[in-house]
Image 1 (cartoon, helix red, strand yellow):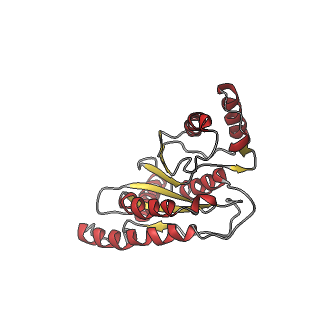
Image 2 (tube, helix red, strand yellow):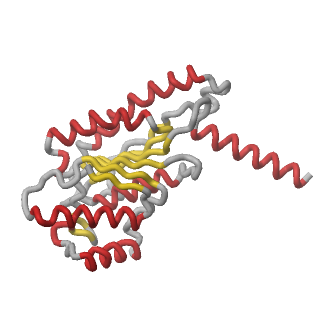
Image 3 (tube, helix red, strand yellow):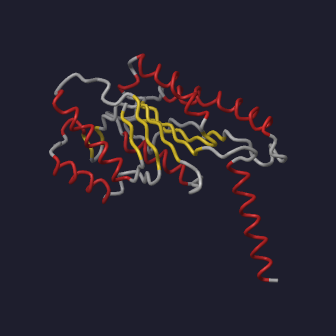
Length: 237
């Protein structure tokens, strides 16, 4: 009897997990979207990036979390609810691909308005807390974590973090100093856990107004930071 009970419990857990993540067609990715509401949000190009790139990204997602970059991202009151995109088992009990496509098409359309609203977050302190937004996005995704699914994070930001323990403008970018800073951030649990994530950044260093010699070194810093955080890939576009 005890052995049968364990089997029933395991089966129930599998059904629950399938219901939360969707069914009926091939599973897609668990996704996070980070939108920078600080000075990056000013140029029309930044908003156009989200408008043109997010819908296609959302097509490959079963579930999506949102986070805003503000001056205090983790404690920000500017939030958007996560978006389940795939049909649940309750919505599509017969795993009908037509039902799945209908549910998905409706929900994918909700991704863009939610992301765009993050551009208009109220000012919350000075500067940009990019790392805090990444941590908040990953925190939401951790609650949905499924090792069998791909995990993707798209970031619409210039990555000019200048809050807390990381001030990009004053950062020593020598190789040894970059490594030391990344080790400090990791030891302080300020790097998000991006193990298994594919990360894509749109708008990286968009405002290149001074010190062009630092740009390649800043790219090296962020690539090294994402690698240290566990990301499988990091595209800085």
